[in-house]
Length: 322
Picture 1 (cartoon, rainbow, N blue to C red):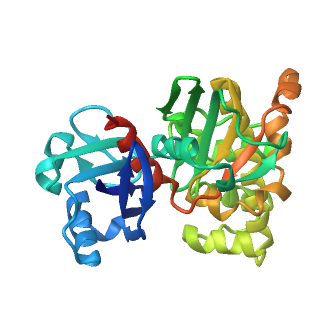
Picture 2 (cartoon, rainbow, N blue to C red):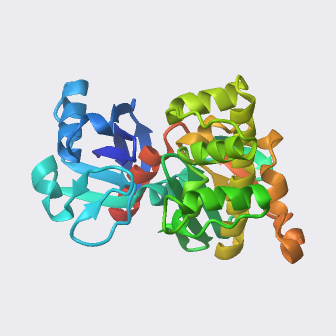
């Protein structure tokens, strides 16, 4: 059967047609990416997708949302859209649907993607383990966290809001980042640092340490400067970002009892080639008495271009398997 699969984040809404057969995703069509800020709701973006591909949409849907999937009203974490599950069939003209958290969807993708869809970042070489827990973490507009539990009788993808645990500084520079963020937020989560917007907080803190005037710029421009190396302070902020991301990934692996870690997310994909040369691995391993344990955990990058769309469709296939 054919379904619409959607991945709705804080910045972008992605749509595609997917084919489900024998409980698996056998085909994922060309994705269409829309800017959430240009649409009033999921319904209007959904209709725009249908108009863009120029054909009637299937009456089944898999929808990944960047918010906890709980309650009668779902409010996006980094996006003003509001979704009411009870009205989805009526508003989107579907007969059945699956809702999944956006990083729950990525966890489904991790389960179903073959070894060719992963590249090695650090730790022992080899494929992901066939049993046990795999932590999935990814920076984007926010910080997504989930995990996969594999066993002889199948798998379970578990959604979490781990990105909202407290940020834990490890040195004086990170103490300064925390202090700066605390002036803006009553509570500082790890997402405030290890996400796209987090680079600005790091950059502004480093400017303050050096006594420079803080230059405000949009996130896109700052990331371009950081990755191109045109601005040495932006490049230093990116190095610090990688350190914090490595520390967070190690924390989640310890907390979830993981035997492997997968880095995903829109930003994770963008910085993939930079992470192996950064301080990510050093901070991932720096867990005191548990460093030897951390050295046994492989860390991979998922290379699939649309893990959210693919994973949402996989979640629908699992839920509707005969």
